[in-house]
Image 1: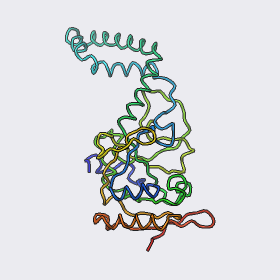
Image 2: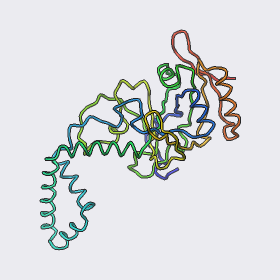
Image 3: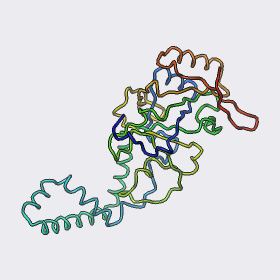
Image 4: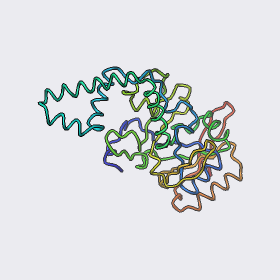
Length: 293
């Protein structure tokens, strides 16, 4: 576990377990191979994922702050020459003038801003994958939408496992579980857009998912398959066997799929600890999850 996760964020709010709703074939495959997909933003069910509502690049102050931050990175030799040839006060005046002119130019290029946003989304879609999980194992809507209407299965993960808490730096937005917030879409400026809004917020329509997600860089995937129906590569990440607690059998799961599932689990000595549970659909529409014998 990374040193940055010795005292994890939101310690009191972290769920004990998180769940992945799956169709039968996919659940069996994941348990057999101990590999799971982290999906590109463009293939997620919500077409607005990672596309917050933006009202522009930023305020003038935002733009100038951005320019001042980027100048030493993009033009280190120029900044070095200015600092070497002038007093600190004069150098700051010159740099401020360059920043102001750069901000003028950026504000006069709305098409460039639009392209920058599109380029950023394309880069995120190419570079990162999302594993979406839920903290609710007995959601009728989730069983219906993501587990083949009860014919599928539910994999229960240990949310305390270090695999879910691999934060690499204090400001790392990836590699660790984050809770999704549900809010109405409100305009924000591109340059001061918080990660929470850009990466971990959905509209209230999706609140039934009670989602927690972990984002990883696709370059770290253990395997690649595909393409999928969207034409995207399927990037697979290795799951530590001890991160899996149990499998919940769907309330409509067939005897054949249950047989296949149990054979796969029993064939892996690393999964000998995995328990089986059963989802039971009550007459009132509620779902109970109980031990299965």
